[in-house]
Amino acid sequence: MTDKEIILEVSLLAGKIMLESGAETSRVEDTMERIIRHALHVEQDTTTYTYVTVNGIFVQLDHSKGTNFVRIDSRGHNLERITAVNQISRSFAGGDMTLREVYESLLTISGEDSSYPLWLRIICATVLSGSVVLIFGGRFVDLPAGMAAGLLCYLIHLVAWRVIKASFFAEYVAAFIGGTLAYCLTTVSSGNLDSVMMGAVAPLVPGIAITTAIRDIMAKHYLSGLIRGLEAIFIAGALGTGIATVYYIFIL
Image (cartoon, rainbow, N blue to C red; front, top):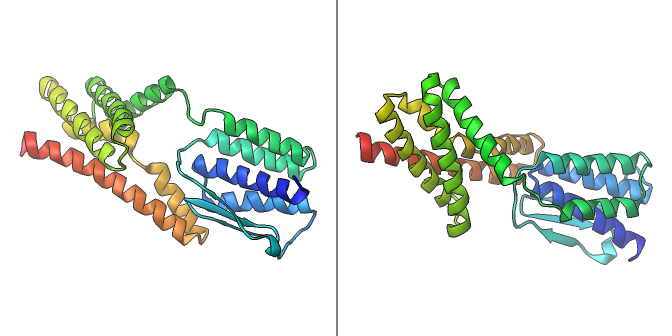
């Protein structure tokens, strides 16, 4: 590959890893541009353009050679991978790494499993559910019910997403089943139903997506911010509809 082809490949790979890991589009653009400018040894390059959306990355290094594009098919949240790419970018800008070393490091990160271990995610989801139960007025005796409902809700979401592969419907099914378990457990223990239900759906609440959407909009990346915001609203709506279905069937 020529030098410009390597620069293009490195910048696209860095952007792809960050975007798949849930980074804001403004941060992705900034990291890619820093890599390109340092590789070209220029402060400002008017022939180079980067454009990042939540579903794709466009880069142009030279007008005569067209624009390169990479599609983003899946997105998650992994701050560890985002931090690793940022650190590599800083090391390259500081002269501590060559472009080839940057490329090899990014390939290593790209080849690693992008998700945290399943057992760790299950433990975190369960602890989060219990914490939310206490925050929203539950008692310590409600903790087991909230943690059990949150665990079941999270597991159902994992299974439903693998089987159905339909966005928002998996959240609805998980919230309905988790809410049903919360109702059954609190009926037996005379617990606080509202706080236990909130704990049940807490692991699926799109808090990071909402935060990222706001940061994208504040950075004037309106298209990406609105898309992420709309996605978060639909997820929250699916969770709310699942819980409302439980109320309609068992309580009203």
